[in-house]
Length: 300
Image 1 (cartoon, helix red, strand yellow):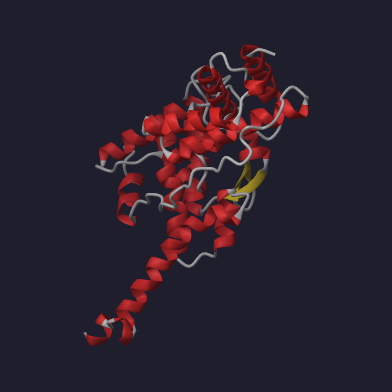
Image 2 (cartoon, helix red, strand yellow):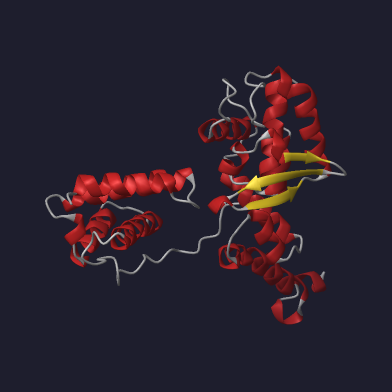
């Protein structure tokens, strides 16, 4: 089985595989094509560990991020799992190849003052400005991923005693996300007055694209958020608002399990990166108030 046939078969498998987001399908397909190009005349089904390690080493020399190489290795592991399941490969050359160690860096979060300035950025009551305000409020008030935001349909919005969103996250998992009073009021104003006057209002999406058949794209949402930030001198993207949502919750004593559920993390380990936020705050309290921590506040 030549490499072109392997890549084509794996691509077809990805397109029908359950539990994979469209972004994952695209990135895995791109990584496997790149691996096939690296293999050259070496058949993928007969490649050994040295081929895989050489590919990743070449990427590292090109200054590829550890997270990118981890994704590449995961994609190729999925490829060989697929080939072995069908009896097409002679072995798994990714076995024993360790995932690159990822630095547990704290996601960038905005200050409360920056958030207040950002949410005040939209000017006027035009339909596009109301939509922009809704986008900003939803990202900050719910911690939605931008792909989850774009994928919201009108049917996903339930308005009873309060507004609740039915969100489909990674792996097709659904979670219910409530809106606070401010975001709920903006949602109602958008649905009743603003959305009907926007192009694509006949479509099924909460944030419809111009034609109505597709939702507003991730790229367009990124543009809108960055433009809103530029108005008030804040460098911001949608994922910053997701991180800010989680950070501000923990700074105000929310428990980690609740934050995990609201973010839609499958594992608590993923959410634990935010524990540094709570740790830093508690350390400051100790330094300010405890005699052995310096007790600066006690001396005043």
